[in-house]
Length: 83
Image (tube, rainbow, N blue to C red):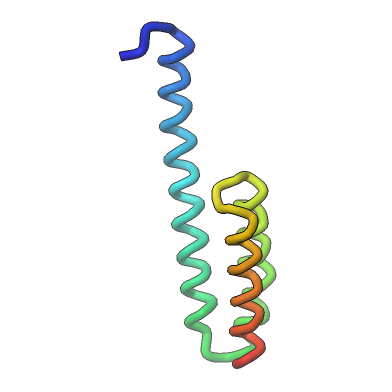
């Protein structure tokens, strides 16, 4: 158990941040799945900017690694081009 007030606060804060990161990560994965499931190129192209924006935001906040973000964006662009 924590011995200091600041350590107790840090435990509470870490849990709040962990839950927020988990929610955002799950939301991103759902958006990716939805985008990959699109059959029409026009619909997928309309959805792409919002998904790319979400990926960039998560990379900026270190929820995902910047290289992973780059790989995801590249693969999505490639997938949409092949539709």
